[in-house]
Image (cartoon, rainbow, N blue to C red):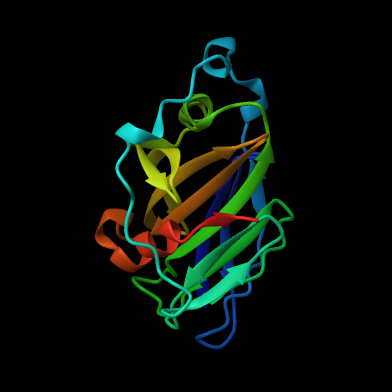
Length: 208
């Protein structure tokens, strides 16, 4: 039995996933509860915030290269994963990619998912909207910040949530380019700051 957590800000749904299968099976299925707020209801103040220059943001990590892992692609983006991770499938159409660590840790599979939203909001404005929406929906929102992924400025938000009684540490990265925001969500029983492999996977992110 495997457990996953995904927060997709396109429709702001919270889903605790449970899939049954062999150890390397990361297929995702489950029920969701729609939260009361959406990013579409963001304030005018958040929508008009300017995106900061990327020169002041630190690079998240050294990305995995294609020689160190396997490139997995969705419709809109790709990630490079090591042999200890697998690409999964989601019943939620908003999830472009979901990947998970094969090894279960404390009853939970560390996982990363990417959701793509068409929006005029930049990374800073999207962060403000997401923080407001998640806080209003009852999530415990932690530190916010910024980083650079693939030479692109991103904003970040940390949160904690519960999936079937398991405390999950999550971090979202908001990668804005053109008319799209890519929401990269890490979920694990330990924070992403303690997971060098997950950070390297996130650093390998590329829009297609």
